[in-house]
Length: 106
Length: 338
Image (cartoon, rainbow over all chains, first blue to last red; front, side, top):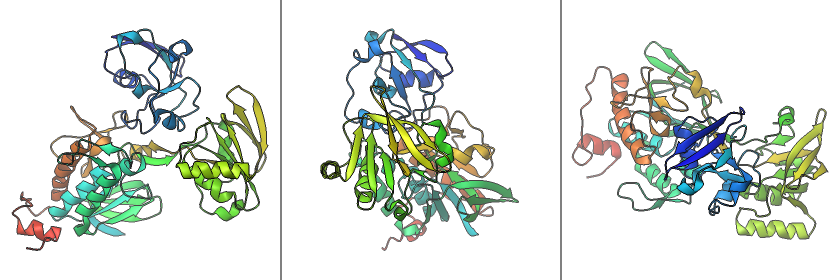
């Protein structure tokens, strides 16, 4: 279990306990956090679960796999700290992770 | 006006198998899809990626799955209306009248929506002031490349579309290629070609830059691009092309009076009918308790929805269940010679 904080575009902050084994994307979708579309359902085939990871957390996350950076080319306003939230697996180590959701996904 | 029994919206794997299920019970159908090819997400998003959970097919790619489904429905000689999006539905007496964005009209006794997450549309620039230039000097696809002759064309993107057009247009135009990072993700041969053209001075390439703003009056005159380090560079250009892939949009489906739950259409699990009589929804777009977004679930949903369409197509007939292994009628429809 990890507390994950989602900053949504409407300047709201949602801090939610997410079970280990879910992805940061699934945590958002299951808790109705607005702004994560996840059109492809976690297949790394779209870029609509794009989030910005808070800088101090970015290097702590497991590195991007091949393909994620390619998909991020398709994301809305990608930045250095962009990740696809479907590729971030929740574990105890991620307790306190903060991500921000872009103003839109496409 | 095209008359048919069932109109299927969406030519993805689930729509394709539903053609089969309608075909073997003797119903005719037409298929409309906004993409330029058959296969839906399988062909657009992951043609080369292997799929491992199609029953009895240990491994196949999105493209192979699509090819096999097309082969499986060959006998039904189904018409596909590609590059068309269904815009309007209207019920007149017991028939649905359907109209696409290209003006094609259908009359059907039922409709099956197998539209996945909606229709694919080009992903656009996030910059605000671009709207008044979109479709004029800011484009996401190329219909007539001759308009770029002897002009300056700035291309954004790092995939095959961006690279291919940069190479192609460099013959007749001044081409500037801009990408948000150093690596390009297109075919190696295209990346090599772009690098060679860059060396020869035929293409200018700027990486780690993204579009920041657009200036102009009637037409685009220049754009500002912003580097990762926040420095800005001005580029004079006549045209701006963006190749950022496709995004899925539910589009007109939201306007047909169907119940919607987030981006899905709730259905009953007896025959996958929606709240509108004669409109069914199958595949990723439908929702019900326990729904799994798997291709195999979509096949099952299509089989039941097809039977659900029967009573609308043939109100005076009783549907009778038959196996493909034993029924002469079904084999006849499949074109099997005995």
